[in-house]
Image (cartoon, rainbow, N blue to C red; front, top):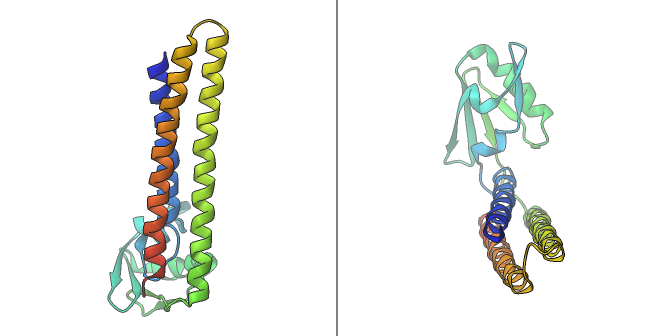
Length: 185
C-alpha cells in the first residue's frame, strides 16, 4: 500500500516537473527557438494545425527563425497567424519563406522574463507540495482506519518528504538553467 502511494506521488511530481519544463520551452529568451511557434495554430483546410506541422522551421545565425511552408499558398495564412499571436514579432514574407527576426532584448525585458520564470517555478513547487499534503492526508486516514501502523506512517512521511525535496530541487535547477539562458547575450 505504502509503496503504491509513493509511486503514484512520484509520478504526479514528475508530471509537475515536466509541465514546468514545457512552459519554459515556450518562454521567449534572448535567442530564437522553434518551440515558440508550437502554440500558434493555422487554419489548414478547416482544421486548426500547429505551424510546425505545415512548415520547416530553422534557426539562422542572425537571430531569426526561418519558416518555409511545404505549400506556398500557406505563406499569408501563417503570416497572419503569427501577427495575431502574442509573440510581439513582425513576420517578413519574401514570397518563399517567412523570417521572424528576434531583436536583442533589453536588460529590463530579460529581468521580466526571469521574474516570469520564477513565478512558473513557484507554481510548480506549490503543486508538488500539494501532492505531498494530499498523500500524507490519505496516509493519515489509512492509519486512523487501522490499515497503516504509526511507524509506517512516519516512514511514509519521511519518504514523501525526500521525494518532495528531490523534485523541488529539480525545479530549482531548471529555473537556474532558464535564467542563464535568458540572461546570456
